Length: 588
Image 1: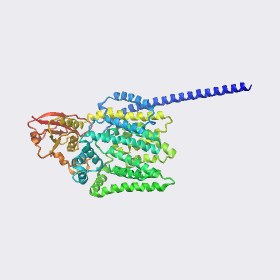
Image 2 (image 1 turned 135 degrees about the vertical axis):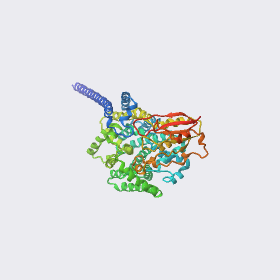
Image 3 (image 1 turned 90 degrees about the horizontal axis):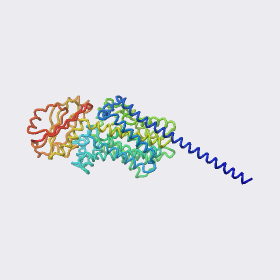
Image 4 (image 1 turned 90 degrees about the vertical axis):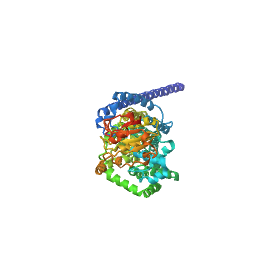
């Protein structure tokens, strides 16, 4: 009887276990099916969002990559089908366990490769001319001369010296070619992606960090800026480095951590004046780390701020006259003009970044307040500052984008299923890369400034050591066409002898109010005057026009008698007023 009861009990236990196992498997299957449905819905939503953005592209008022313009060179349907293929890639990524393998390495390599597809583009922002000239001074005359003459012989405008100095060192080490600058900037961008991951991991966990780093790829405008010879992406790197090293120093202490934080703060401050405001995040970081043991945090924060301030202060004392004039220019000219140069947040955060990022960032604010998560103040501070000051030009707020990505990552990390979260993030990243490579890149290659790149490539193939370059007055734009000469120098290995043609110059009071004022106050360096022993009579002549129908002045027409037109780069666009038509004339 006892044995019978035991057997019956054993059978009952086995049956119950079997039923529980079946129930768990059924629940897992149902859960998996639900997750798949959510992923399918998210994929369809992403494609619908693209179609909606295209239909409402008139709302995009970005000054460089507005969706009103960029689809002029590419079919919307072609991009749509590429996005469908990209969505499949995003799904495959969502089921691969990357987080458990080397997330930092994956982020670095993937962001570097994604940006490489944009290396073939042209320089589409004329500010490049300033940074190239400053960098070439470093290459030709050395660091000592650059630091001594910066702000004197070397026009500084409202720039700080660090980034042009680094560009000059790249020229000195690897030769004067644009590819070296693009590799350098891409390394800084990929470094920023990894730093974003590290910040998110320190503040919360690896998931938030990984999502934040990957979401930087979901911002197509940002990707286009990486390959340009500007200062915004390097500033973003140094500011993100300052944030990371400060958090690490406040948490861990130690001499090496504090020294790293001090150096990073100084580097960020010497990159761009706007970084001075953004470094106000340091007290916010300190406030979020105050606890019962508050004295070490206050002490470390004080050391970081005093140390960084001391290094920057030494620079200010040495260059006091230059810095004073720059700040006067910033406050009296650029600050009042911010309202006129602005772009809407609708453009910046719905068109120039995947809308998932904006929605997730807004959701994150609610979640952080609900949880009373004080750490969130660190990542929202810079966006709050930008909104408070009314800075609406996307290019000016590039340095804060890693924090925006971390805000969105915080929101997406709250999604219960990791697969769904990874799919949302990866589909946003795919969107950013596809738009940058297949929409923005073809658009840039059809703008008039591409003529300078094309002409430079042709000039490199010519059997000559030097060329004469002449710029004619612009008929359509308020840009001083002389600034195109340094950009041409960037794309050619030949020695340039710049010949000034004194056309009509705008009135001084107009120049002072112009958004392109720097182009008229631009100092042409001595190295663009060429070698005095060069014989201008035998050199090819390169003429930069603003209009293909522009008539040559008599002085220039006489100069090219006995020359023949051998090359013309004459792309024109209807988007930008500043046009550059380049013609090359060689002796018969």
